[in-house]
Image 1 (cartoon, rainbow, N blue to C red):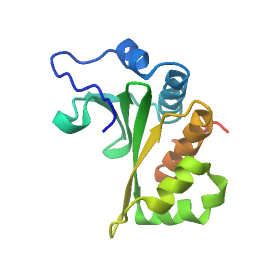
Image 2: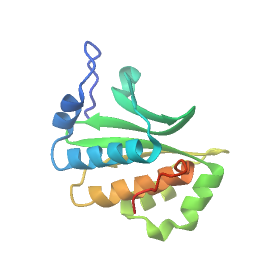
Image 3: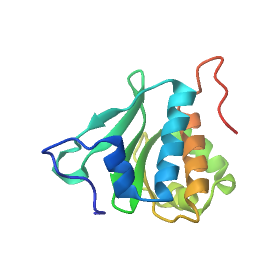
Length: 152
C-alpha cells in the first residue's frame, strides 16, 4: 500500500491533496480532474475510502463511475473499471497506449464482465502520457455529451 491519506478526523482539501502528491505529479492530477470537469461537466464526490483505501475522489456520470482518484504522498492512483466490451476495445488499440496503461491492460486480472485497473502515477517522466491514456480509457467508457469536444 502506498502512503495514502487515511486520517478520517478531517477530510482533506484540494490543497492538502495537491501538497501530498507534490510537483510535478500534482499537475497531472489537476489535468485529469480538469478533463473530467470540462468533458463531462461533473463534480467529484469526496469519499473516505474506508480503512484500507483512504480518501479519494469519485467521478460519476449519472450512476456510472468513470474513475476514482486516490491521492498519495509523492504519487496518485486512478481506478478505471472497464466492462468486457470496453476492455476489448482498449486491447484492440493496445499499441496506442504508453507503457503504464499497456502493462495494466495486460496484467490486470479479468472478471467475467471486465476488469478493475489501478493505475499508479509516480513517474514525473511518464505522468503526462499516463494521464492522456487514462483520458482515452474514460472516453471508451462514456462518450462526452453532445456539444462537448474531448481534448486531443
